[in-house]
Each structure stands twice: as structure tokens, then as C-alpha cells.
Length: 272
Image (tube, rainbow, N blue to C red):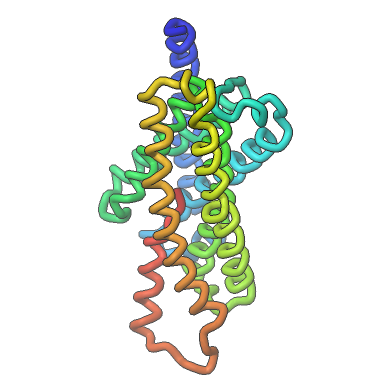
């Protein structure tokens, strides 16, 4: 069993490094390509252009990870019958793809520490460790994929940042995106907490649960706590901002200083 896990660990690390390198190369390509050929990108302030590329990659990763995870959760019958212990190439591929992206994003955070809050790094680190355990040992695969489905809200979060950056806060698209953001975030990150935790509690008296090593239980179950706390924290901020945007009084003119403050505030809602 140890040799199997060791062999799979080597295979997973290889995939992770490939995905890490792919995201890094794509980041460098877009950073050089967009300033030359995109007029919208050229209109973005110079100090925010790197952040724009990061969010493009974030949306790319979120879209791919969400689609792959949804397909596995809904179409893999063996996965649904073995939520605690199950492994397949498709699951490992999906989790390793996300680990590679998260590792790349953590590198960017370390390079630009002043632009990111520390809990984003915590979110990424916890996710990397938990996903790696799931991918290598084949534990809690269903929960791990459900966690990845929560990335479905990330493109809407990034769209909000893009629209604010190009001064489209008063546009209809900005408000529509805000509605989709709060609906999707609620469904994939908040509502999803209930079935995820139920799976843990309902499985504690099963043979599958007993066969999982304690270190994996601590890592995978324990990681859900800080991730859910962060999701609730972000949810409270999103509700406040979206409520102001969609339901705020149009007749009340905001002072310029407050608008500038709100533009700076968008950094608090960078995606994972």
C-alpha cells in the first residue's frame, strides 16, 4: 500500500509541476501579449495590469475545475458509491490541475505580498495540502470535488473586479453580474456546506471511515473548517457590496473620495 501511495505521489507531483509551469508560462505570455493587442487592457492603469492577468488565469482555472468536478460528481457512479475512499486518473488529474494553479498563485502572492491579505495564502495552503492528500491517498474524493465546484463563483467575482477597473460600475452588466455573483456564491459555497458536513457525520460509523488513517482525517476534515469560515466571511462582504450596488438609492450621489475607496476595496475580494 505504501509503495502504491509513493508511486502515485511521484506521478501527482509530476502533474502538479507541469500545471504549475503551464500557468506560469501562460501568465508571462498574457503579460506580454495583452498590452500589444488589447485596447481594453491598454486602458487599465499600469499598476493593475498584472492583477488583471492574474484574474484572467483565475477565471480560466475556476471554469475548467468547476466543469471537470461537476462531470465527475454527476456522471461517475463509482465515485457516488464510494464517497470516502475512491481514486481514478480523472479525479487525480482534476485535483492536480487545481494544486498546480494554487501553487502558482501562492508564488505571485509571495512576490507581491503588499497587494494580498494573509488569509488568501492560508486558503491556498490549506487547499493544496488537502487536495494533495485526496489525490494521492484516494481519501474523501467526493468532498474534494465538491470543494472545487465552489470555484464556480470565482469568474463572477473576477468580472466584478474587471468592470470596476474599467469604470463600468454604473453599467447594467455590472449589476447583472452582481446578481449572478451572490446567487452562484450562495449555491456553490454556502448551501453546499450542509451536504458536505452531513457526509462526514453520516460516515463516521462505517468501515470506510475506520479504514482511513487519522492523519488524513485531521487534514481533510480539519481543512474544511477554515475554508468554510473564509467562505462565510467573504459571503458577508459580498452581500453588503452587492446590496449597495443593486438596491442602493440611485438618486443619492456619492462623493468622489468614497468612490475611490470602493475601488481600492475590490482587492479584498480577490478570488482563490
